[in-house]
Image (cartoon, rainbow, N blue to C red):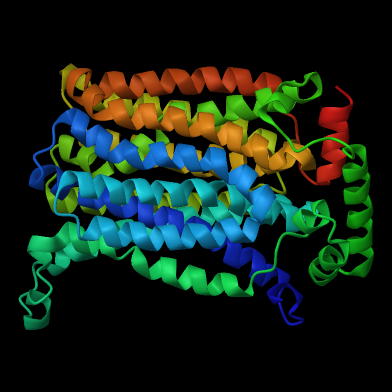
Length: 465
C-alpha cells in the first residue's frame, strides 16, 4: 500500500495535501477575471451575475456538509482524490460552455471540489501534525489557497496582455475571442498534477486508528514524529476512542449535546464572521469593483493581481506567527484591522465632497485583504480542526463550514445589487459594522489552542463543560 512506503517524507506529505488549497484558490479565482467577459458575452443582469458567481458557492456548501461524513467513512485521502477529479471535470465543462446553463454547471462542479478540500485538507493536516507545529502546518493549506489565487489573477492578466502581441502562434489561440475560455480551461493542469501527487500520500493516522487499524497508524506516526512520540499519541488516541466506545456514529443531534455547545458556538461565530465581512465578495468581484472606480480593463486586472500578491505575502506572515503569537490574538486584532480597512474603503467611495477616490479604495481593499490573510483566513480552519473531539470532528467542521458557506452564498449573490443600488460606500460600511461586532464577540468567547494536543483540547474544552 502507498501508506507503507518507507521513503515517504512527513513534511512532503503535508505539503502535498496542502496543495489542495492551491487547487481551490486557482480554480475559483480564474473566474474573477473571466467574469468581466462572461457578463458581456451572455448579457447578464445583476442577479444573473450574482447567481453565476454564487452557484459555485452553493454546491461548495452542499459538499462541505457531505465531505465530513464521507471523510469519516471513506477516508480523508479518498475525498481529496475525488475532489481532484471533480476540479478537472469542472474546468473542462466551463471552458467549452456555449450557453449560461452549461457555464453554471461547470461552476457548480467546481464548488463540489472546493467544499471537499476545505474540509478534508485541514482535517488531514491537523491529524498528522505534531502539536507544536499544527497551526503552521494547517496554515500551509491557506497559504496555497492564496498562492493559487495570486497565480490565477496573474494568469488572467497575462492572457489579457498577450492579446496585444501580434505573433502568429498567438493568433492561432484566438485569445481575444476565447480569453475567458482559456482562463477557465487552465484549471485542468493543477487538477491533473494534484491527482498524481496524491498517489504518494498515506491515509490519516487518526482515521486509521478510528477504524481499528492501529498498526498502520503507528507506522505513519513513527515516520512523522518518531517512535516515542508516536506511541504517546496513539495512547492519547486510544483513550479518546475508549471514551467514545459503544457510541454510534456521530450525528447532527450529537453536536447539540451540552458538552459540545461551547465549542460549536465558537466555531459558528468564527465561521459567520469570516464570510459576513465580505472577503469572498471582494475577491470574486475584484475586477468589477476596480472598474467601478473608473479603471480601464488592463488596470483593473493589474490591481486584482496586486490584491492577490498582498494576500499571499500576508498569509506567509500568518504562517510565521500562528504558532508563536497564538490563534486568539491573531483573530481579534486581525478582525479589528479588517474593520478599520473596510471603513477606509467606504470612505474612499465617498471622499471629500462626495467624490470617489480610487486610491483610497485600492489602499482600503489591500489593507482589508492583508488583515484577513493574517487572521480569519488561515486561523479559522486551524481553530476548527483543533476544538472539536475526534469522534465528531469531521461532522462538526462540515456543519460549521455549511453555515460559513451559506453566508458566503448570500454575500456573493447580493453584492452586484448592493453596489448598484446602495453604492460602494454603504456596501463596505455594512461590512465594517459586521467586523466591529465580530471583534466584540470574539474577544469574549475565543480560547487559546496553541501548542496543545487534540486530545488535551478535547479534555479541557469538551469534557469539563
